[in-house]
Image (tube, rainbow, N blue to C red; front, side):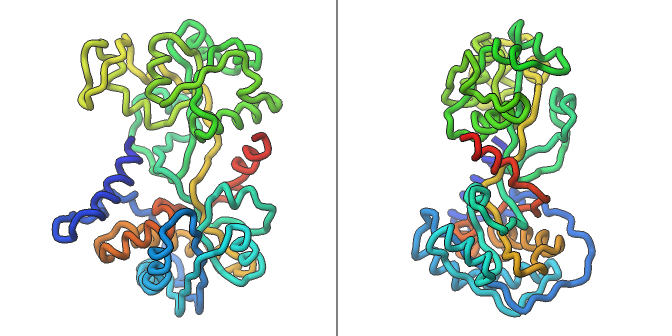
Length: 358
């Protein structure tokens, strides 16, 4: 809910008259600290955008307005570019081919689209909903969250319900496939990255290629709230969960069923806290929405300083009141997201593995 709130607040602020708005800077993701490095100078930068259902007129306006504004934003992070040009790609495949040949330098693409291509093109930055990352230690996830870094991306939690069998599984250090198969599983629809697809890969990676379709007892729910209700009433033993959901429902979890929480949600009637009663047994890999891909012919664009600066510049264009309302709206449409961060090596490997089992 927090990450949805951040994005929706930004969009709503942009839609208000300029004289009435507060700067969306307050609701944007916190600035990453860019290490002090030598200023970077580029003579040119050609960038390709994707149609992906965007308004054609808006994209045409974006390629006129955004190059100069992006120059300004990058300069704030010690990256100067003499000339920036933008185009709109005819297709994802054509854009990737242009990157491979060096006809263009950068492209904004769906991360999954990039992952499914057989290409030498790699991302330098990736985006996704802002995720409160508690690290790899599962014990850290089984308590009320403390302040943690906000990282763009998706990652599902594999949780146990407070059923006798769920608690039994949660008490073990490792689980066999047979034990998982005896559990009653709850999932979301097959297109849900957090409610289905991420779990599918987690199972395949940890249990010799077995997936959700190999489990004996699986029920599909229409929302994470419905999954939590099923966990509370003992209908499921194991289920995947969006990390923000436990915090969103923590108040209602321990309220009587005839009472409502501060958001108007009926209580779950549970005796303990959600952190005690819905422990995390596993974490899926990371997944992403968008990628900024660079041509392999431009080694200078793989500089970590540039990736950090570009991620920040895109965020600034979409959220800061330093740029006018039109620029902010165009940036949101053109770049597909504003929560980018530099990509680590192999960041799309999980998405590639996921695509091989679907």
